[in-house]
Length: 212
Image (tube, rainbow, N blue to C red; front, side, top):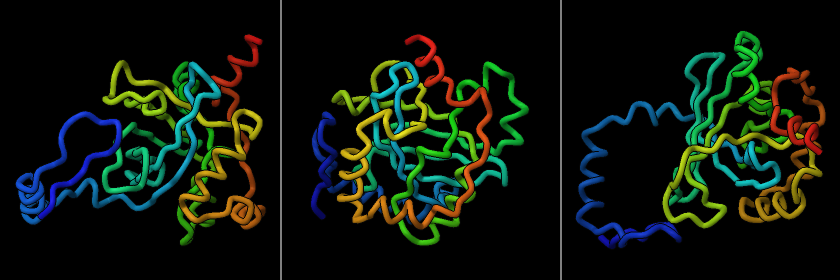
């Protein structure tokens, strides 16, 4: 069994064959129940709440805790050696409205920013996700070339309009890698009604606008 090569820009030698054998053995006797609940792969661009416009692409692997709460593990790619870069929680509007004002400002809407990376049943899934509010922290600033997850977690948010980042470049490169077509997806979702967004959500963009 060949050793496994790690992702680029991460220090350390390749994973030796002995460790890979131990991993296989562990997978046969352990059940990994939490990860078995993952049921959706979503792809989205997150921007830093304290630096709107600086963005990172994130692959979400999500599971339902209840009808009103989802939790997601975020990776920098969908590949086998992807780096775990953050976490996101998603909740329904009825839960969001119960939060204190200061807490609501940490959450973002998904009306614009969330785009999925796979085809099967995705339009139906989008109808559910588009109304959720997300709270996301990134632990690893891969966009600046960090070899390890350094510093404090960074609160992230979502874009709310195409003119907030280089949309054509970012989405075009993503579509090329995934073999998808954003314009076609957009047409297939034209009948999805956008919900009203609570005034306390997406506060990073409002703070930035007020400071200009």
